[in-house]
Amino acid sequence: MSFVIPAWDLPSVPVAGTKDRFPVRRIWCVGRNYAAHIVEMGYDPNREEPFFFAKPADAIVQNGGVVPYPPQTKNLHYELEMVVALGKGGSNVKIENALDHVYGYGVGLDMTRRDLQFASRDRGRPWEMGKGWDHSAPCSAIVPAAKIGHPSKGVIKLAVNGQVKQNSDLGAMIWKVPEMISYLSALVALAPGDVIYSGTPDGVGPVVKGDKLMGEIEKIGTLNVTIG
Image 1 (tube, rainbow, N blue to C red):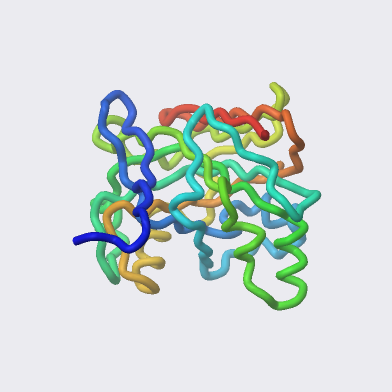
Image 2: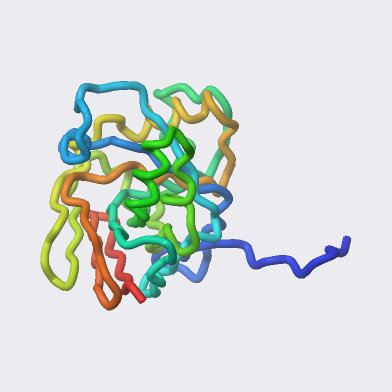
């Protein structure tokens, strides 16, 4: 089979401790999954049904890479998140079986053009241009669950130029990993290579060109990027 235009490289991230790579099929993001972040964004922190949005797989930025400051925004925000990498797909996955679908975990950033996101939200339009733009999904190497288990607690923190901005615990997530996998699988058929960005804690804020971001999640690792 031949393609009528040049085919692009398959987006992927390393598997920690190996020469292997994890192919990224789709990026699903969970919104408002930490109560303190919900409050800082001006919403009611009571538990509601989870909601999801997507980013293109080629929005992945490798650990140590550069996130070019995107056009058409004056308010670029960081959101540190645990990444859940699926090794098995399925529909209507039961909560008690959901962790069987997880290959491993990573550290990710849901970079957000906040002004574009809010402008779209206020006009009742989709968020894609605020969330799903080029280079908007930095991700560390994936650490296999076979090595670290399934973290449900542990420090999640982010520093900008060495100053800690986000500092929370995975245990503060409203929707736990098995629940989000089960709920999402009732909406779409999940597949191997899908990754889920599991929501950010409070402390989100703006960055400018030259800023250096370091995210860290206990047991999983670190993620370093520079705003270019």
